Image (cartoon, rainbow, N blue to C red):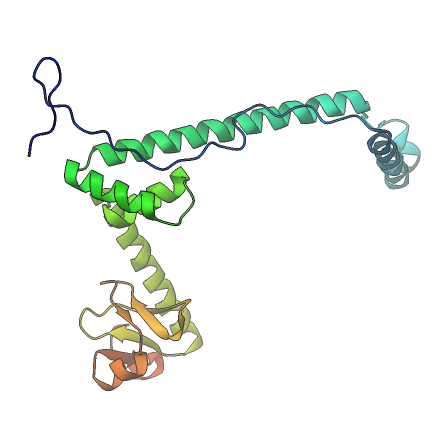
Length: 226
């Protein structure tokens, strides 16, 4: 169904609004307040550093003097580093929002609206990092799918190598041959790293033949590929 039309007859699409929040570091940090306690602590740490330098170098300490900066120079340097880190973090935050909105605009209009409604109703923080993860799960790109598949295969190979090294068995999905990995839901819950199928009761699936146990000691004796 066509939407409302503008002055020249063009269809005006209803904008898609995303839940968001302002970054806490949207302004440059103010310089730290100069207090007598901080100055006293700096003098004590400087004195300890000089004593350590004198003890480590002996009489050569006079030939290689310790480079010391004043309290004011140290405060100026630390404040400049703090401002630079805050601006860099703010730029990364804005770039993440741009990347997430670009990803959303590349999707079909109906899928955009469905994802936006689900995002606005979700409980996760309104942060671009969560939105990118949200998009990766709801509408992953082919590159992201290949990247996740490669990461899961790498994890499966690592599990096989570690279990083979220690001579301990592991479980595989009989349907696709993928390695099962335990997840935080409990020791009975496993997920196949190849097809992403989740088994909430591994013992029952084992009895039904959906899961098989691979023993590296038996496989090596029989010459089977691991």
